[in-house]
Image (tube, rainbow, N blue to C red; front, side):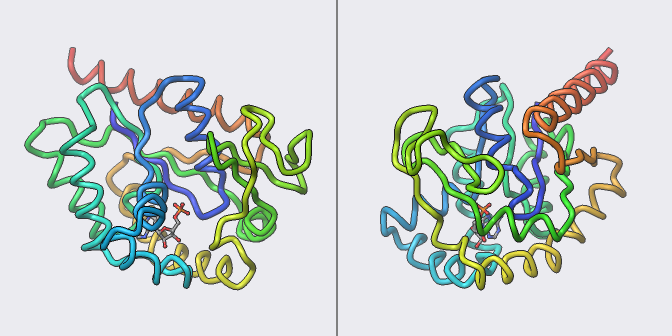
Length: 224
Ligand code: AMP
């Protein structure tokens, strides 16, 4: 099963991806995590990407596409994967389709976690993440039991460099300009399943699992 998770910054993709990975053992490739790791390791790719990330802009397609395709080649097996945050543009979608074509295993479904724009800004500027296990908290609606410490593993919490108000506004703008055409594309191909992301975390997880199951059944039916 190959699925793409699409959603605006703050839609809860990261939270849901961590649950799917930790509790449902689904493999997960997140372009934002790969880019942040490259920045932290101060690689040449990381140095190029950092400038765009700090400004809240999308990193240019050629940098991101190269990074993800390399990851696909080296670590992603046929057993399945959820792409999180990639593709974000039509060009990235085409590159992914071309890369998967020779394997005969295309994208099975695209899950769009839909959250109203006014909710996104508030969520992002109140968000904290665990340095150890990646669990995400929100000091308004989902705070940790002990301030500054992760409930799951006791790791320290930090605020991402791009979750300040100015950068958040730019990131939302970039998303609505560049990613909405992608959503229309997957709507037209019939691959898009819309998930209401403005619900409690567990309800959203259940909706995602149900959508993945529908896609799995549709794939089985095509095979038989
Ligand atoms: P995320 O963790 O998915 O919110 O991504 C954080 C930042 O990484 C974004 O604001 C972009 O600057 C960059 N980024 C992540 N994924 C992509 C992508 N597929 N294309 C371009 N830039 C990306």
